[in-house]
Structure formats: structure tokens, C-alpha cells
Image 1 (cartoon, rainbow, N blue to C red):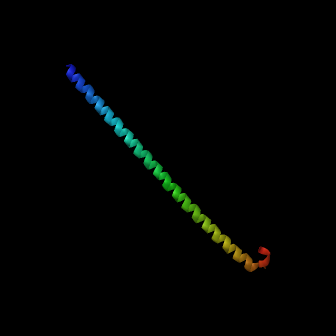
Image 2: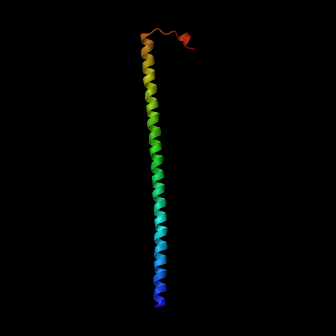
Image 3: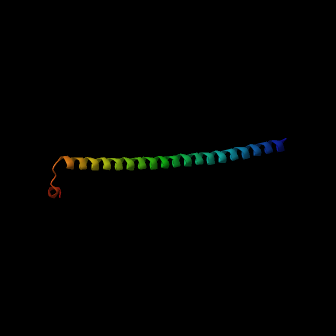
Length: 79
């Protein structure tokens, strides 16, 4: 009878330990995936910011060209 209880206790302890180890590895993998998604979002934000800056630069250049055609600009006074 005591032998049977010991085997059940050992089996339960092994099962509990195995489940705990699996849960920890699963949680670590979830955290890695979440951090990687953050990196992807940061890359996308950086690309969008760069695209917006390029668009702003082009708009600024277009405005300058338009203003220079409309207004008389002395090139020597710009420096």
C-alpha cells in the first residue's frame, strides 16, 4: 500500500514539474514573440516617419520653386 502511494506521489511530482517547465518555456516564447512584434512596429514607424519627411521636403522644394518664379529673389542676398 505504501509502495503504491509513493509511486503516485512520484508520478504527480514528475507531472507537476513537467507542466511547470513547459509553462515557463511557453511563456518565454510568448514574450519573445511580443518583443519581436514591437521591433517590427518600430521599423514601420521609422519608415513612415522617413516617408513623411521626404514628402515634406518635396513640398517645401515645390513651394520654393513657385515662390521664386512669382517673386523676384536676389540670389546674392541668400548667402
